[in-house]
Length: 235
Image (cartoon, rainbow, N blue to C red; front, side, top):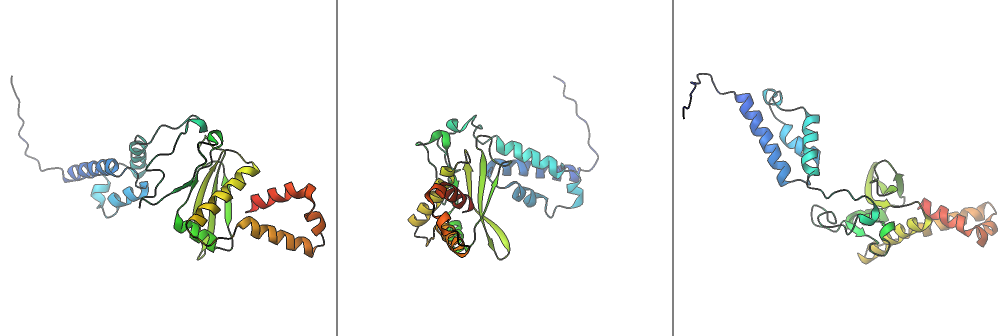
């Protein structure tokens, strides 16, 4: 066997070696901390790098795509429908500090109408200490197995804080009521002082009906379904 050798007289390519090492470190970081937010990984490796190193690295969008691809390979396959979702397993039921995050899941009683509710104790305490709840139902960010993503928010020091996330299989009144009951029951189990928001809204509506002389219509049992629906949706 003949082995050819070539004499190298040029200096080492510092930029290439440095960028190669950085890319290897990013890959290692992806594998070891696959649940870390994407921006944290990007910020960790790109901040403070000299321009000569940045010029030899892939662009940030390209790096983001690579990290997303690596991280997604560790995630379970996306279920075809709600019935195939099964039990939500660790680590998705806990926060990064190992605190309970999945506070309610009506599996197995209503497998085709799953309503997982995600929050944590501190968030619920903030939620019930706020006089006003902001609730936003969005469709675009909801997984395709669910109809809607419902987000409970409050304003803290002029900043909107997302405190609870719910995935809904439908837009039925019963589902909205189940969400509120789940949040209330879990908060009570933690000893959080709570006031049921539907009670507050119902009382407000009753007082308003009195002010405009429509209390009889408000209390009319034939209209109670509409009243309860409005109260549940507004809460």
